[in-house]
Figure (cartoon, rainbow, N blue to C red):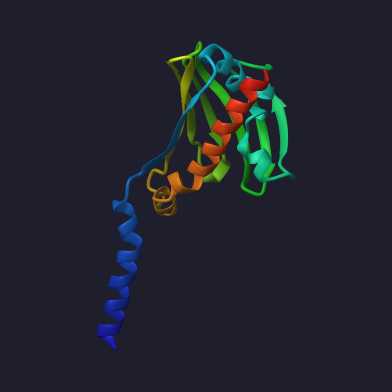
Length: 171
């Protein structure tokens, strides 16, 4: 009986300790070449209404609630969202004209990932890279989720980049 209790304690300790050896951060990233100049794409990404034209979560969740706040574009512009994939806010926190847009996402207890769109001229278009980095600290559940982050977000980013290309063509 004592051996079984000891084995159980070792198993529980392993289950608790193993996630602490996993990375404390994860990144999801996708890139696409879009047939539009960075100067055409930048205003879409850096504005509330522009972002909604390629927001992949709107197509995924028709009941997604979006409430915009702050200026129409630029630093401080953002929106609150509430849908089946979660609730939170997304705010533009840094810009490099026609080169990058950085957004802070606040998911409350689920964390505060940072999303960056980078724009790089390529031929007659631009390579757009959409990346999100999440820091899980010592949270063991977050560290386990981090193993799957790219697979969870990647398909949405791929769809969003296609929608961004469509929005740029329509502009």
